[in-house]
Length: 167
Image (cartoon, rainbow, N blue to C red; front, side, top):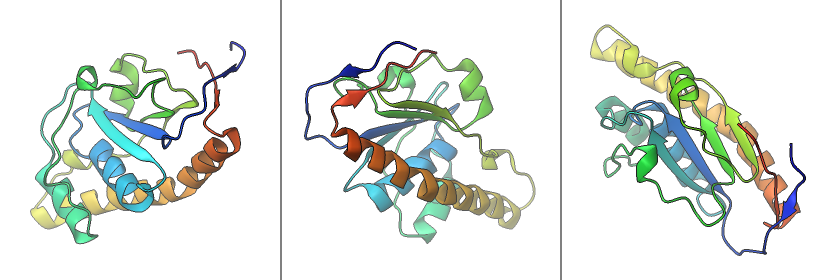
């Protein structure tokens, strides 16, 4: 690991990028949850290695909790314009994205946290909705654990400190 470097102070919010294969469910859910719960303190984006479309059941289960994903679209990593200095946190949320994703360096932390793919659920709509709700709730619980830590670290660093992470 290279030595930490100081960055110019910035009034911007810390940023997080969620990466998944198709940017259709887990990464969209994570982005929507962060925007809804922490958007005043943390900017969120999501992208995929092979973007498809936002899954209608992801839109449905997020609407159940008051988060509107209807205007979201699946984006590829190559479509993103990272903030100046890059994303503070980059999180892969599925194993295939971790394996196939080009390395996206984070200013503070690159992290992998896999969640089951609800779009692979089989059965009737009730069963598939249950899989999407489970993924949503697992992602929400995890975010409620890690986001306060990220925000505390960013506040303690005063948006001046970045860690040069390698792949």
